[in-house]
Image (cartoon, rainbow, N blue to C red; front, side, top):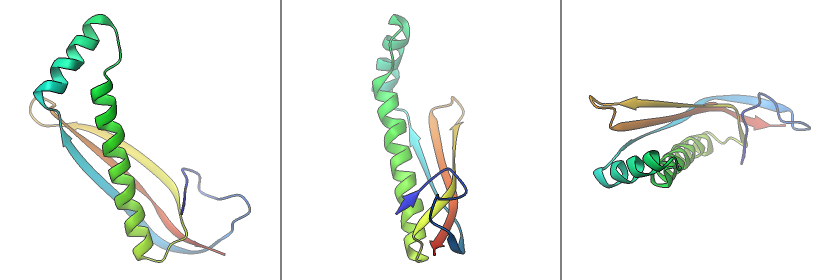
Length: 106
């Protein structure tokens, strides 16, 4: 399945718009990741544990979106957007949302 942030796919005309599809994932930051992140921040490095958590959450949200599109009989998802929000009293949770339009290509 083609998944793109653009509203069109070159050489692939959209035959039918099937509707909006999306995926949402909320992940909590645990104490070990927090400690490792603070060590990385202190020494000026990147926080690999947080980066992996965000990548995993984004991949899971994309799978949910793709599964929804497949149920509608879509060939592609266009105009995909991503949103990341910090939630919780102490900002200890991250929400990843992905949304796009499921289409049938002609």
